[in-house]
Image (cartoon, rainbow, N blue to C red; front, side, top):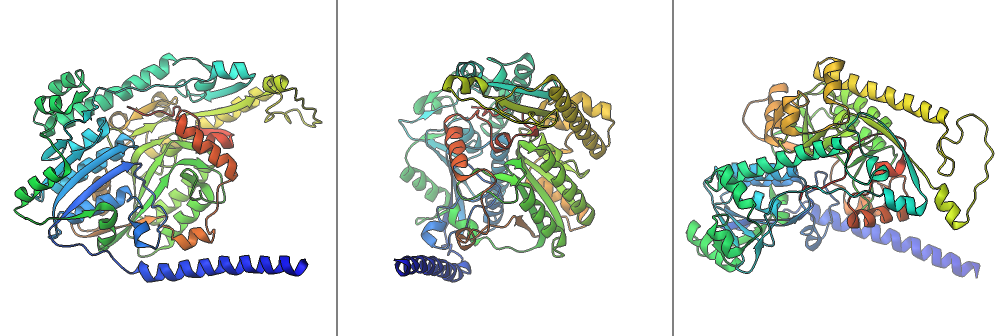
Length: 577
């Protein structure tokens, strides 16, 4: 029996090693191959779901590579190169159910506007479009919609879920303490509706996106913003009504779109090349600028997220990456690309320290994506220039502490806990015992001190007084346009604006080739297979449960909340629809 089990174990080990070796061999075979781009091609910008900032895993097989979504950087580089690529004759934009924030949409939209300067046509074919998809497609020379489809442009809303009543029924209470009257992340556990402060901020968010949408669409469709606002009040639109209103140009199908593209380009046989393939053929030349991506909740962890978990900024791996960038003498400058609502306060502080050391070694510019709030804003406080989109969610300079108490739930289930303690505050983290007044006071002192440090760090970085930053802090969320007015960011724009700044700071020519080198680099299939990057501190079942729940209930807190502790994190989990 022992020999049999030994044989089985050896067989399993040999099989795993064979798979790893085979995967490595396949990777080597296909790694050096670039896709062939035929002449007279239309670049198909088919975008759906999330558009990641951080490069996903690279699969070695060509039929799997085509399923890997390009990053925002990949799309930027592709459209930039396609403008001068004689093989690319036009771009067809096909957005479908985009799951991104408004910052990324503004980036891709500007990239398309820059491409249009080449004189090559840009067409859009919409399928079940909402406001994001239409906003992106509005730059096109011609917008098409299937005759029976609906243009679901009807305005904007933010809705919050509140769990207090449900928790009361379950016998669960949540103790929340925060510094900053707008730091309302715990409200979803302790209230049944928005506070006046929450309503004030979310109204400002909706106003910014609504007005930004109306202005951009109006300019592209040669209408006034007031006309677009009036049309929004009439939405959603059947395809025919959308054409009559001037929101689209034609109703039609894909073959009709290509027939019209052939006439516009005077090419009878147009080929199609998808962005998922094309971005791999873009040559990488020019001065090397690191694009250091921090995406997701900031957590204290010694390992990165695995293939199935949510994106996180795990402190130890991210700090290691920062040091790699700092040590690379070929890197002329660094763009720190942040897409994070914040998270663990200590992890944020450790990351900021390493970024300040990086700033002393290399020119640094911060580029904010969809969101760079709370801890996500804190790590931007290096004293270097900050660039944000008008619709980037940022600010939220505040601190909070959240602790659940499930004593009531245990009572309902007939579960009791009996503990032996030494020390006045030994029960401070217990989910069974309520916090004492002394423990609550102790925690309040702690988060007050963290808040003071937060404001002081921002004040020092922005060259303002503590009072000036405190007045616009208080946990308040700002959109990029208002953050610029308040001095929390320096310029409005995206990757092009950040590159312009880094050229100046690194004393590079104002024009010429730039190679944005992504960090962390794209992991290969073999690296994932061999487990060179492991899952975060949450175990697999917890990660899976959180992921499933957040898909069903987006308002649920993310990984940083699950780890607990003192947090610098965005007060809300919401989507502007």
